[in-house]
Amino acid sequence: MVGVVVVGLAVALGVFIHLQLRDPGPREDVPRAVAIPALYATMGLLAIIGAVQRRPAIVVAAGMLCLVGTFLSAATIEFAVPGILLIGLASRIGELSGRRRAEPLIAAVAGLLVVGAAIALLGMTEGRCWLASGSPADPTYSVMSCGGQAGSVGVAQGGIAAGGQTFAGGYVSGVLTTGGGLVEAVLLLGALTLAAATGRTPISTGFQPSIDQVPPL
Image 1 (cartoon, rainbow, N blue to C red):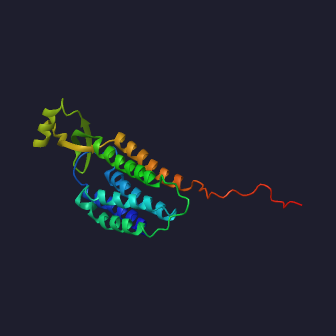
Image 2 (image 1 turned 90 degrees about the vertical axis):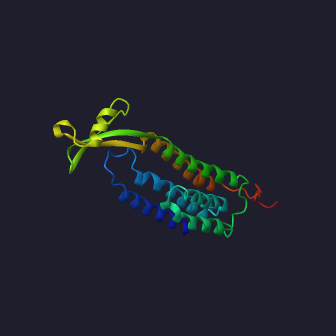
Image 3 (image 1 turned 90 degrees about the horizontal axis):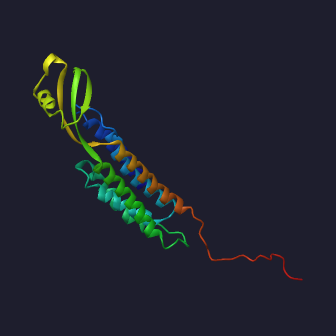
């Protein structure tokens, strides 16, 4: 249930980000309202996988990720409560007998994959200079190299450019890129696949049935 709540909070975070992104400028290659909530939704899905498969280590990893995720911005502080609950409730999950001792390692790797996805998404960003032309009600944005077009951008920022075609311009830093989004998607899918696939591995009970089922005469 807490995992489902985390997924719901991730969806709400996406809506919040979408409503806040009203600054003029070209769209990012990767929608911020999708890429960032995907990180938190993955945390909730890890918690669900750990609970269903009765794997406390996975649930603890999901809770730790929620706590770490609260440092991203003020809008993510609400993930602290689910994180604490997941860590506390993990001890109540009765782990299946015969689980490998590698469970903590699997949980740690899954957590590192999610952290790596966040680092890739937020680290592989770039700055862009842009100009807006046409009608202010339906602008057309042009992205350009900031080095060679600094003079044009400065004119655009100061007002309407010559001819009245370009009416705005500026510089945006930290733009999410396609490369960062692809790396994030691969790492998040890797974390979920690792957690789900390793939980379905047959568990050895140590009991070897007898081959000869017919009692001797």
